[in-house]
Length: 252
Image (cartoon, rainbow, N blue to C red; front, side, top):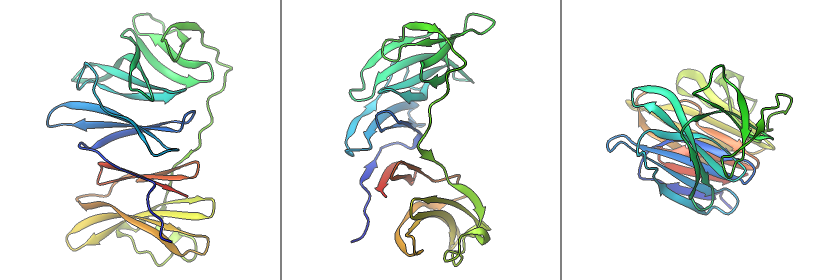
């Protein structure tokens, strides 16, 4: 029986960034419509395949972006101005409803750990770190450096030469001789570029333990240059983008 994507979610604008809340298995998507200068956000449940919300637009329609996500909350940051990449302020959004839980324009994100969200007040120098409550944004206490970070189940592919592929896959002939490669359980996942006439395409291949091809997809058509890493694995799921605007997830 052929494999088919468990999630195949198209969007009306290019996907700019994705973030996973590993505590709830929620995939957050940031979409940027440059022609209308509008950014929107969506949330997909990776267990059910349901879209929790989409077309979520903040009061600041352009100068906001995903910072991180955890404990059922999507964390967004703003910018000081359109001409600078410096972040300013944080907003917490419920990962199921898309409802804004809290906003603080005076704090900036530092890191996420088991204490919660670690931030600092940009108005105070030298910088002093402290933890805030994920759901209210209220201050909880001073940052404890001994607290370790959060382990991640996200795996990124390696960039290798095609000649270094495992035996059985050496017949792949990518354009530029570079592939993205990841071994997950008994699967081998490869993405590569191919020259189709005068334009490039980017392909995704999934092989089983016997190096038999069991799934493939064209991720990008008619592109002008080599694209960066094109997929990740998360727990037992393969996640990638098709033509920058379709989120696909395959259960492995």
